[in-house]
Image 1: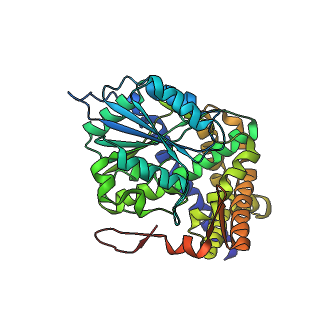
Image 2: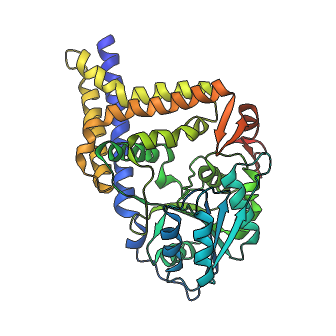
Length: 395
């Protein structure tokens, strides 16, 4: 009986990974926005590009220059200096003196019950004149036709919200390996091919490129509806979807690029602020996440080592699919297939990040973010949004 149970479980895991594989391959192969050859509209609507930044002096200038160089005929740029202590605001002001498309907003104080970035984007949205709003980050660089490609696709398919995945600039081996691992898990969780479907359980948003109609943004309450959302990009995407609007995610790796964090240690530090938030600050959700990921990602290794009499054949098949997918994702990110060798190590690194994030949050009773403390009770209490069909659907 135990032999058959082990055999059946292994086969089930193998089938799950086999079912996931074509979806991820299809997404990477056929959802590249600038390869889709979308016809351009007869006229382009005005777009307001909103760039919040705090202490981004190393990257903000190249970001804004890449936006200024866009060949899109009708856009404005609103850059928000959110209480920076470096030269971010000065660099913004210098560029705005010679570029009429660029408007700079300086924020000196943060109101209660707001995260800084969410507040900055909220303030900019009230000043924006565009028919579409593009929320992005101060470390992203854009190809000259990024806006033209994105708006052509959005208008042709009558979308309310379009998000694009960026190209992550390669770093060291361990950094590249984690980026590939995280991308694989992200695609499994958010099911990109389902995002364009009416189901409200498939949604997404990315901070590097969130483009949506201004009328939709205001109808769903914008960032005023998610003032304390640490994962503001994902939460904004869910706001769009649960309110019944059309959404899609495409690969924009040829149009925008960034360096997420420098080195594996930098990624781990950068993720600590939002890892527990991604689980809605829930300890049961954390336990379930670790157990589920262990079953999908680590159990096959133990089964292949310890099971006998070929009851491990399904688990072996799952391992083949896991490493093939990791190698494929690494190739698509331009970091090579060799990152597949450390897949189980990356799983353990991910566990460390989420568990350490939860430990720090629970120990302090909240989160320190940009020198401001946010109590855990307040963060948990603000995890609801409004929709026509579910007034209190948890984010």
